[in-house]
Length: 386
Image 1 (cartoon, one colour):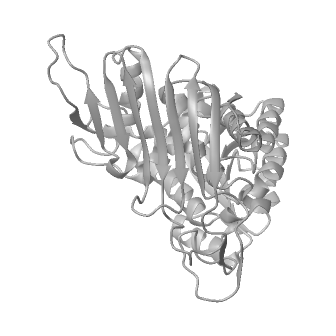
Image 2 (image 1 turned 45 degrees about the horizontal axis):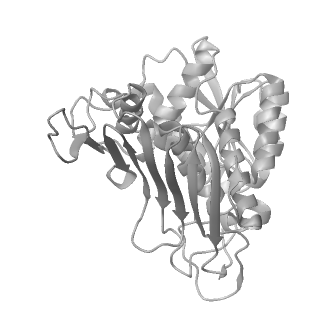
């Protein structure tokens, strides 16, 4: 490898691992002037066919069924983790001990304690980290953050964040690892509400206290076939086993800055497909965004005379962060994979400068603190301080 390249090893080559591999390849095009260009060195998965497919599609130099081979490879400087949550702690501890920089998909650990342990391991090793809170990187979300940072909304008063993704609304959706507490740990609280909490932190700030409820609406699902399909796959009639984590989470929150709001997520809801969304109100204006219309931001910023008295639809364009890296035209939309490319690019930028960027394991640990408070609220049925 040349002095301007960095070796990437990806662990877990399901849908998300393939998405990460594609993102690194896109950096060479979208961010061609990036001072560090990624090289896909090795990928690991316990399903051999997945590694063969990944090598064919993305050009990995090597494949393996043992994640330890990725960490031991001397050409790998970045360990990218897209494996099931149950493996994250062991992989991170090994990668950190080897001095590798680490990208890990959310929610990082199976539970808040594991996430905090993972954060501590990276801190001890003084390696740089990144977490897959990719919705932050939508150009108009970055613009929303900019408007709030500049004080354009005044004092923030209300926030409503949600992630409604009905990927498991069909009772025949298979019992993938995401539905099993021993493998995934948290259910919707980890899978979906982690994004909602992180976005609330990004847009509004820290959460002071919270009260929450949860429910599992579909208690049993068809057993999945190992190594095939995704959490969107439907199973045939046959053997079923219990779902051991939650389908739904809802919460009332009080933010450190005095704002009040709600956080909500569900994986079995009918209607919404991928409604990762927020609405924020302040004394001088308001914003709202929904991933299902990812390239649109609704802005309410009336002038002193009160006009315009309603929301204005803003379309993503080259005057918003990162948009022009993908196309020069306003209203020419970006997609999900582009957010993963921006995410990977930002991590490599952090490695190049040697300065930790956001979101890192520190942001994941902050999300974990809120998740821990939510779990305590379930147990004690009361408001809990974060």
